Image (cartoon, rainbow over all chains, first blue to last red; front, side, top):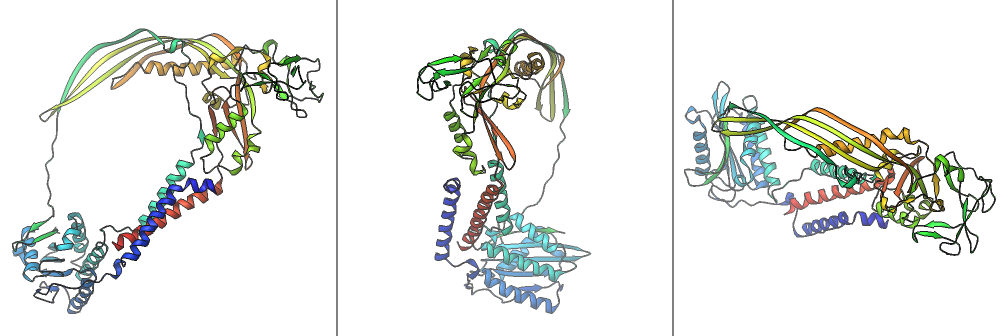
Length: 278
Length: 327
């Protein structure tokens, strides 16, 4: 038993430290699930959050989305806005960015303050299966979402938006709410599968390290039994014979790609975002 | 034959601690007296019959514990030329095992118990020590490749060399174990022995230990010794060839000539531990203390320790998950 305790001393100490922090954390703060946000932005010009100008949703679907948004907004402390249009004038990334940012700023969306915490998802349906999508982020949402995460979310939403806009927009609302819930903390969410996976991996490494049962390595070398400690080389020559040089042209490829990131809207407010044509 | 104490009549043995003969009964040093008997298979101390195995040259009497050395098995063609006496005592050998294994958590509980370790035996293992001259001729075609870029053009320069080498080396006293019961690879790992402490054979060094005579003769073992030498020679040769991108051998001729072979007894402590019906053997170089062996593992301990690690890490993971959610 003494050997067992000694063997796991470091692990037990580490466990005790984590346990202590865990207890302190429970005492000091309530879990984030119980965190309640209070709306402080009183200047927002509208209660509406679903602007279906392209008319891709039924009235019932719009109402459902409104109810979902109303619930989620208070859970995460961020405004969630959905806009659909069908306007070739805005066919292009720059036009979509400006439309989305200006829409957000003009209505003074933002849970905490005008142009504050929130996101606006804009779809521009151009017919024949073509459309542009853009997610404009502000405040905490802007700081939480990386460009890659924005592209991932837009990809997921617009994947089936032509066939099932209602399902796609529900996904947008739920996904945003889930991400902002977890990121309302330290910004790190540890998935349960990762806990089990890491524990299994560490245990496996531990077993492999401890299972090393062989004792005794080779401690002789090639010179051990050689008289005088080294061999004699009466002939040791490296004779240069010839040399030749070849050349080849290096093929170069040029390419590029778009990217998302932070920018200032025409209203002077900071926005993040990403999207594109699909 | 047996060595008896002139002072008390007990069996005197070679003492690694004192580096001389010692009587364990009265602690007298160098008080030995050689006693021989025509009936070799009777204990000269208690008279009990002795039944040595075919290759035993010295054994311990099961009745009185005295060590008898069988004259005919250390004389004539079985007379060793050289011997390295034990320098590591049994107590020291036990400490070496304890040091090596005390931190191995998966080890069965009984492995390091005094009762188990007490069964350890000191054996003189038969070896042939070969003096081999090696003459090695080697030649090869080698390439050096250098690459650089100017603008959008990549240049590759290839230089060709012809390598010539001739190597002469005398490999002295290359040990090869001549025991059928000892695993060759583990005996090889016990090397090197310190030959500066090697003496012309004297039977007194065997008193207090089990002895074994060779069961594989010198000519039969010679190819194995030459193979060891050839392997070292190739390594020495390769160490002289460097800086090339590729080497294609054209001549690789390693000639090994045996100059001399000596039959020697080298000291090894052997510890056999039986766990779940399987025997685990450990060997300790009786001169240098180097240890070789593969430890048994307790399945129960593996499961218990792994469960501890997995449980604690998982619990810490869940606590971290909650902590991250709180702050």
